[in-house]
Image (tube, rainbow, N blue to C red; front, side, top):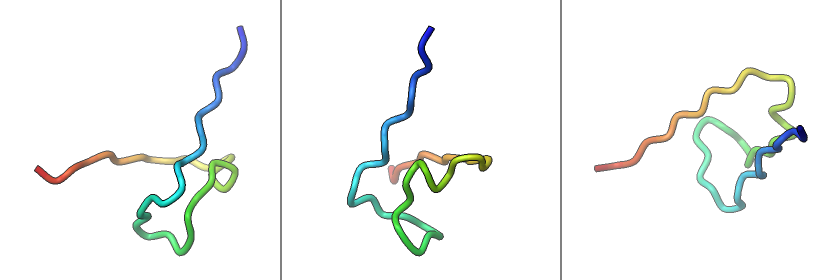
Length: 40
């Protein structure tokens, strides 16, 4: 079975608490918590 790789983040996203846009390579080896939310 081949591993499935996550797609790169799309360009133009608004990042909170980050001084630059993130790439998956920046997060390699780190524990990451993604919080998805929207305004209702």
